[in-house]
Image (cartoon, rainbow, N blue to C red; front, side, top):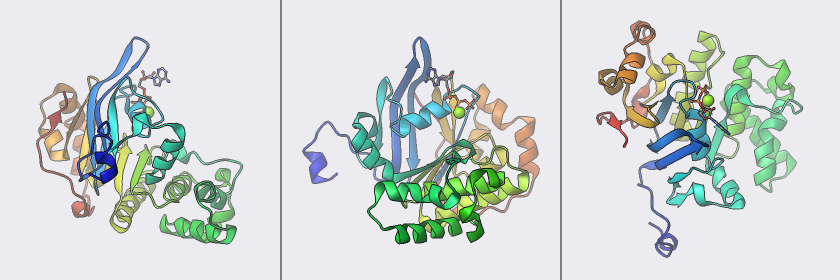
Length: 286
Ligand SMILES: Nc1ncnc2c1ncn2[C@@H]1O[C@H](COP(=O)(O)OP(=O)(O)OP(=O)(O)O)[C@@H](O)[C@H]1O
Ligand SMILES: [Mg+2]
């Protein structure tokens, strides 16, 4: 705990091994209860997958963790500060700790790839144009895009290239945390597998903590250290093996269903050892 935090008893310190921690999050829209006390920790260095049925509240949880949606109750702690109680300027400052790649890459259609990647650098740094361009080109390279892609507009890119460009933009400010919303949806299996491997490699090289919302079972099996499932407005979390052994009916249906069995039969060569997934039992968060 820092000296400054000690002078502010209202601020609760998050555990040292957590990159971001949601505690007791309750979200409702009118009478509709979405989250009823969600506790979720993204540990430093891990890749955490978030699954759950359509409408179960994955995107709302992501927005809550980013401070874009204020929960009815609960906290989201990053470095001991509660993201949900920041004003807009403080939130923008805090947001430099993470990069977000929204679904479909969410690039600005009127800007070419290089300008899309440069945008966060223009907004948040005082670097000159040449340095920004050099940095943006570097990010373009680390996500596996060729320099020729720099001057293309989003409409001129393949689906896989759009995702990589979105990833490069998310990494523009060297964040420690990466949030990905369905990064491989709509990609063919080869492009999706390549993207998964890229995430693994970037996690290793850039020591990132990664939270991925996904419906892609291959992603869960090959790169996620732990998986969190939204069930009955709460979260159940564990390693893949633990989730497969879990007897909560919805978890059982998802992890022991025919689609998961088919994925499990395929050979996977992912290097997941770089992660820090724990070996605890799945916990049904109260
Ligand atoms: N701004 C909002 N106002 C009212 N209701 C909302 C709002 N945002 C989300 N919801 C509701 O909250 C619920 C959860 O939505 P959310 O987008 O988090 O689902 P999801 O798990 O991401 O689903 P999907 O897999 O289809 O993307 C849905 O019933 C949705 O209609
Ligand atoms: Mg969603």
